[in-house]
Amino acid sequence: MAPRDRPAAVAHQARVALALAVGLTLGLYLIPEPWGRRLAWPLLLLSTYAHEVCHGLAALLVGGHFESFRMWPDASGVASTSDSGNPLATAFIAAGGLLGPAVFAAGLFVVASRPALARLGLGALGLLLLASEVLVVRGAFALVYVGAAGALVLALAVRLSPAWARIVALFLGAQLSLAEFSRADYLFTKVARTGGGDAPSDVEVIAQALGLPYYFWGLVCGGLSLAVLAAGAWLFRRTTRVV
Image (cartoon, rainbow, N blue to C red; front, top):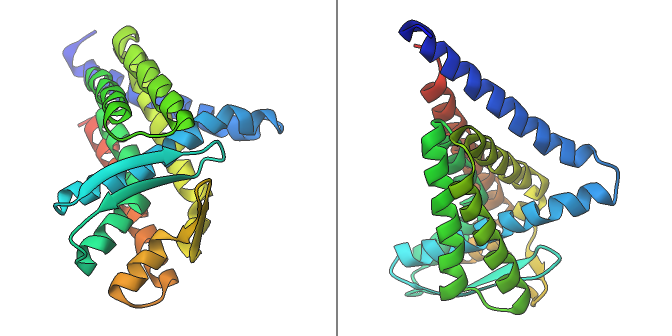
């Protein structure tokens, strides 16, 4: 292949990988029930993981503590965090979870811009899953899922070719993006119902901390999530385009 043809070939491979990942993502939702829902269930749990872990990471960023993370088979979850009680810190931690799936998705789009980088990104995700398994995950169901997911993602990072690692990274990013939209109703509810019981929703926590109605903060966080996803997609497109 002539040197001038390589950028075009790389861009074409990136477009093919993205099309395949999006096709697989949409295909899961076209499979008749209950099989489609069952096949998508582990990926829905991954979005719950992203949501709750980003609550914890947000707590650490404001000087608080990430104490534990629990998850249940209905794909609900709870992150136990602590902070100084400053209203801004409380709101930041709550918003961190709402932006979590979008942040993870955008990160996967960015690492998928280069096949070799995709393998490193999958490896980092696998290590994050396994580290959180040891440090903060609690409860039998969450321990089994996070441990299995971490081992699988890490194995894929090691064994897949760079081209297939890119497809997997894009597929996971597309799944998390879709989960952000399919669960958007959570942005406009006052009460979060989880396997551990009812509690104020994240947007209600922000409203209690900063004022204004919870649905206003739902719109704000939804808009920020879309902006994060758009930024990740733009970076993927910009990095893989022909120049």
